[in-house]
Image (cartoon, rainbow, N blue to C red; front, side, top):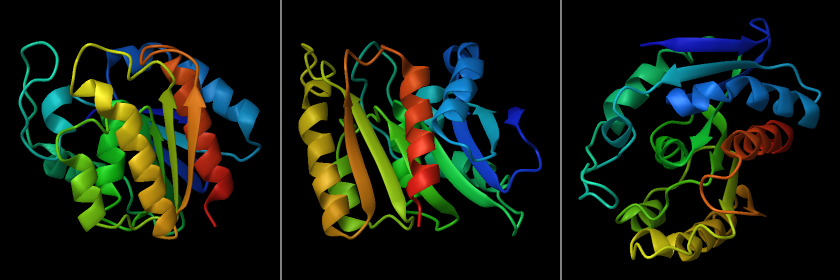
Amino acid sequence: MEVFKYGDPNANTVLIQPVDNLDLAFIENEIAEIQKLTNRSFHLLAVKVNHWNNDLSPWQAPAVFGNESFGDGAKAFLDVILQLTTAQDKTYYLGGYSLAGLFALWAACQTDVFKGIAAASPSVWFPNFTDYMKQNRVKCQSVYLSLGDKESKTRNTVMATVSNRIRELHDLLNKQGVRCILEWNQGNHFKEPDIRTAKAFAWVMQHAC
């Protein structure tokens, strides 16, 4: 497990984020943006994902774009993540962008160790995911959801469902009594992922009760 550490190592608030090389290229900017949005001290642990479509996927699914299908490595990767959450005096938040955001939502159904989930532009188009969320409640206090207003404007019929799916998930979580917000950002999926992720983490830090 390769973990990159940022912020205050003595902070009681710990943010955990699965990342790839693109995320790491902009992580310093994300950290600075979180610091602008909240006055709380935090320690961010960026956990490198070796096989994105496998390690973050809760179950197998056919390829949606390109030729790479999705595996079922989420359980094993969550076990790795949980090794970072053993300190009893810390408060943990899990979040990420795209498929990492989907992973964070799924992880919140498996464990109550995370106080809040920061899901920025999560891949909730993932086959059968919203059905799964209807049958399995999250075990955290707060969930942040966001999406770009152009993300569903795609010829890919699976990914084009993302706007409807995230609205459905937002309604579901609110009906379950979870403190949840859905924020719409300008642009497609690839616009300012670092800024969107920073907003997600800042919100759950401030709104987890």
